[in-house]
Length: 178
Image (tube, rainbow, N blue to C red):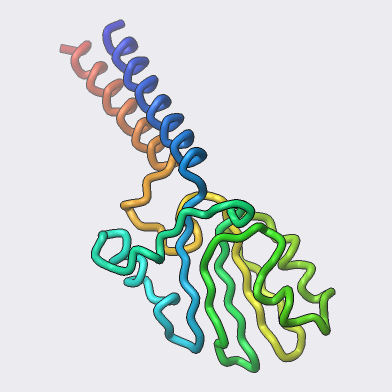
């Protein structure tokens, strides 16, 4: 009975922690990586740009708190012409306007797939015969870049609480056998 009570208390703590973190994310606003560069092999495509910023030693401007109306999704957009990267963009979005929205007016139907893309961190690409545009949309903090251990989300907390509860139940069984 003691173990059950302990597990109940600990799981309640983790549920509170997860809820408090989600409330903090909603109050502070969606946070995204923000960077825009041109050409291939640029700083926006480099993992270290974000790792160093998260460690507090790099350019803090790549960590952005999104403000309305650009607080709906985080995006990552790559734009290529005939196989050459023209731009790579990470940032906040209103989920309606993207760099390809205004620059590629000639073939609007090709880009409907990107505009309708769900914010589930999957990437879709469209080729219109000359331009290749890839877009990723997501709606959790720093989801548009490398997933670093410094960025803790509710899923991580739930995994940790499940492991902890398993260890406690296992330890209790071992104590009961003695």
